[in-house]
Image (cartoon, rainbow, N blue to C red; front, side, top):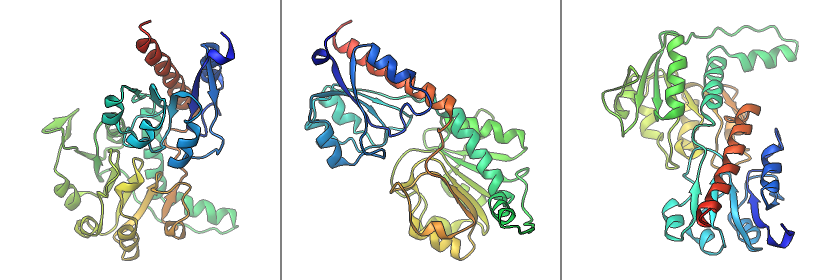
Length: 310
């Protein structure tokens, strides 16, 4: 196939291909021209306008904003999301414009679940603080807490939430699910209301979709003092100003945040040693990235084959 006949594909995720180049090589061998993200970070809306101008018909998408305006001003035919969530993609607009949309919902499950539990154990036992002390030649011990027996509310009990629940059962934690589309019990885990979770939980794990604040002044005020919060879902789920106030008054004993409204993050939470911060690495393992990226490429190719009646 001549280069001029190749379909142009924009690669949105800045880390795509870092751990394994085979998905990219497969895309090229399949007859596509690849355009890399030149900014090496999450693309902004105005940057998408420019990058999608040059006859780009396919997009391997990360978390860049893909609203109706972006789609209307593009020639996109297929959007293949490298990841599970679709909150950054206006799926209805895509459908109305005849754009095929795919995601990779299964690939991140184990990676995100494992790092969630690992981070939770770390903050319960003050591992980051003691590691920092040791590297400064300080022999300081912080007494921590055990996971066993803690009441853990998992907000969002989909693939990742359920996998986390399975792991937590091995620690003999008391697990409850909060999910509006579920009722009764799910995989031997009781499904409770959000208000009940606020009153009872020792630990909150966020694995739900959405970008509107789920935790604000009211919600933090209803929690027990000294709870733990884990957000491996979306940064917008936690009102940062309310969260800072909850930290200041001791409502939150510890937290791990892996997602933020603005990335890279450089906000006030960097000043709190009891808040473990990571740069959106929930799915960032060699195994997970390889699976997600290969699935995203396969979905993209499948989308064009369906459009062309292959």
